[in-house]
Structure formats: structure tokens, C-alpha cells
Image 1 (tube, rainbow, N blue to C red):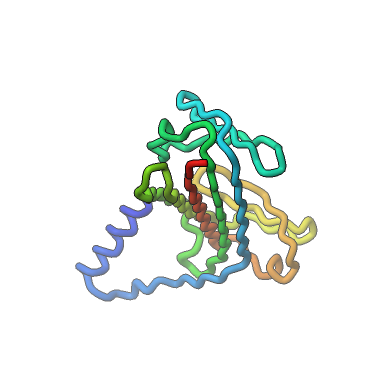
Image 2: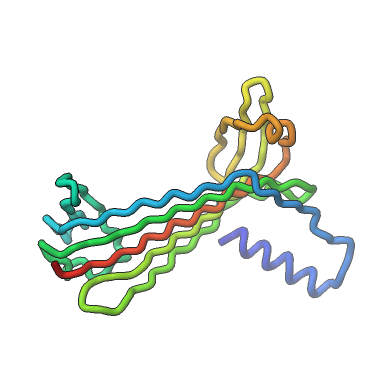
Length: 188
């Protein structure tokens, strides 16, 4: 929130003062992306509304215990014997920012819940998180980069020697994550 407010204040001051030499010098380049999708489909065996835990029996006879997030408001309507289908898709995009304005630190996140009308609970929960950090160390011999975020500093391995050669102290790193969970309960 602070970062958003600071950016808004900076933008407003530029609008009020007019164009000075306040051009933003920032270039962004994607360096890694991934998508992971998992699906669970099973029969409800246990629902505990106090602990928000639900046990499903899967088609192969195994059991899966799920923690039902608080965004699911109709948990008490899920009954033993109902069928639950859940798909979770997680995407991640890592970008490198260069230029004199690179290296802001902070985090922004948002959760959106969309309920689907019907007799049984169904809908989508979308979580988006963006983390901003700054490269504070590059160790080409070890193949690592050290990134400082708003709260922690971490060392990450870098597989690509070309990318490692390109990284410089002061570069910005932006990690964007999106997690979408779609679920539906049907009567057996």
C-alpha cells in the first residue's frame, strides 16, 4: 500500500509541475516463467467446519485432506457423499529490471472471489502477488545471485550463464505470482 501511495503521489506531482526531465529510465525483460496445474476430484468423506478440513476419497482409492480457505463461505452445505472437483493453476513470471529507476522493494497483493450460483458451492478464488526486489550481489563462480526484498535477503541459483553475465548489482527483480483455484461441488 505504501508503494502504491508513493507512486500515486509521484505521478500527481509530475502532473501538477509539468514535464521536467523526470523521464523514467526502466527497462523490463522477462527471464523465467512457469505454469503448474493440479486437479483433484473425489467423493467427500469428512467435512469439519470448525477446522475447515475436508477429506476426499479419490478414484484410485487414496484419500486427500484439503484445507478449505475462509473465502469458501458455504462449507456447511457440503455433505458426505458429494463430489468435489478442484483445479488449481499457479503461474509465475520473473522479470529483470534495469536502468536508474530499477530496484524498488515491496509487495502488492490482491484476492478476488467469484461465487458461481447454484444449489451447491462453486466458484473461483484468484490470488495475485507481486514482489519487488533488488540485486545486491552476483557470484559468477558460484552461479548465484543475491536479491534483497522488502523483508528478507536471499541467495538464488542461476542456471543460465548468459543471464548471470547480464545481472548487475542494483538491477531490479520483479516476481509476479497468480494462483487460481476453481472448485465445484455436485451431488452424487
